[in-house]
Length: 45
Image (cartoon, rainbow, N blue to C red; front, top):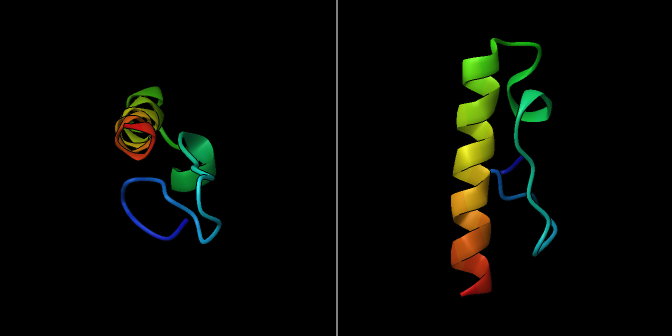
């Protein structure tokens, strides 16, 4: 993961959840997923 929005080094590929935070709480994973979803929405708009 390149940044806090879940963007990776491959354009158009995003990551979220435990893959970005490691084994963490559900709340942390949901937050990472939400940030990635926001970045995906911006990318597609």
